[in-house]
Amino acid sequence: MKTIYLAMAIIGAIIPCLFFFQFIQLNGLDIPAFISALFVNGAAGGFSADLLLSSFVFWILMFQQLKKRNAPKPWLFIALNLGIGLSCALPAYLYAAKTRKSANHA
Image 1 (cartoon, rainbow, N blue to C red):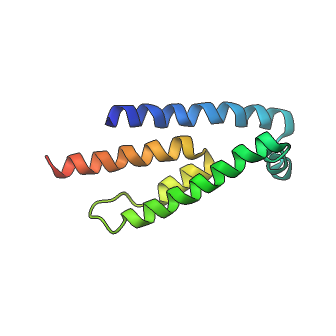
Image 2 (image 1 turned 90 degrees about the vertical axis):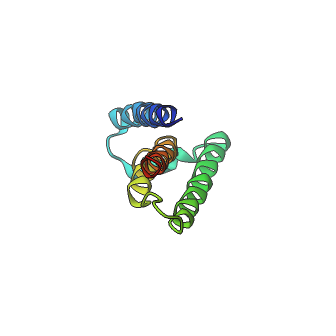
């Protein structure tokens, strides 16, 4: 499973970045335009709202998992979530959690 999580984290980083780079090529680093584009219509707004809510739940989960021994610290994954997206941050977190768990059983 670790390999699948790692592959999905890589794919989850590449695909959103392709779209982000396309936006940046057309608009530059125009943050207000980027945020506006997230909610440009009902379909985009629905996807964006879903992603924002899912990301918030992921953050809650990560902080809850800190109570467990050897849970990954959430800060790197929050940065990945904010910088790239949940499609990278979630599988990266799962990979890190699996790696720590298997290291403890070795």
